[in-house]
Length: 330
Image 1 (cartoon, rainbow, N blue to C red):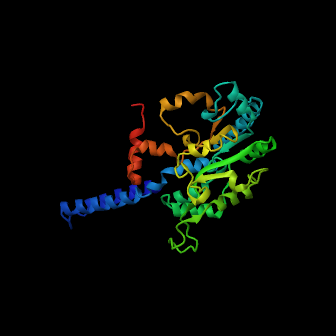
Image 2 (tube, rainbow, N blue to C red; image 1 turned 120 degrees about the vertical axis):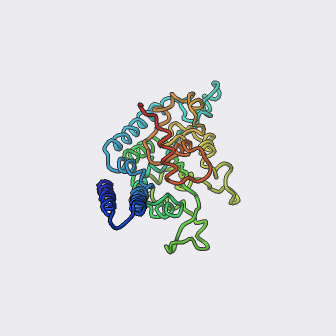
Image 3 (tube, helix red, strand yellow; image 1 turned 45 degrees about the vertical axis):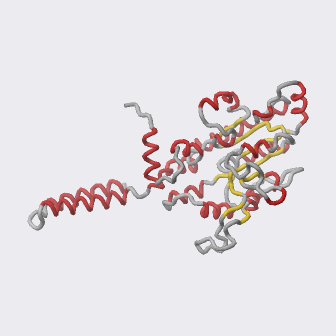
């Protein structure tokens, strides 16, 4: 509606300038008209951060999105039953047994599942909606403020699946690229002051999971149940490979103590590091079996793969790249 009004407004200005010939020369009329059109077009094109409007609205309001999440977790529950019966079943390619000795060793390990957090267990849609509605870009400061409120709600089907797994004696790990430590405006003054650069953020995520009933679980502390990016080991140094957004080191850290039977996530990085069709081909049979994918059209590594650049892009540049990537019918 706003775009239509702006179009009529521009049209009115153009016709007005045409009929002002007695007072202005043609050149002046043209300059005035072009200036007004440029300003109006600039106003209408300024909401570039609202490119996620449809995606956020769909995820926040549609029954289709809810149905996909419920279906994914129903599938996960059924597959968990099969995995517990089949002692050779594993979601980690590195755990696939090569001989009878490895089969026996794998079968002796207690079962576990790995779940991503954001858009898999916890929904961040109020934060995403805030970005869209206020025409703001993602920033670590605003994101950490949202995380610190521990107000995220559960993804449909997630809590029921986790309770089912725990009742079956399965250990649940929450593996996320949320930062272990990060910047946080503790005194809410709109800036990062000394002492706010490296705030311990993990307790906020744990608090959110506890509030919704995803934690605690038997025989494992809340802290050990949640594996975040950049966590420190003995001596305070970041564990090897844990500073990276690539989750492989954190997944593999469980392989010697647990038989990981299912992985549930919302982007490829939750399952595997490689993202080319050739690299993914050997794992096609895992989808819908030991790997369960949930929908997320808002953000993820797919955008970075699409942009294929290291330098920051403006929102206009991102839109242009997305448009260029589309395959049309003519």
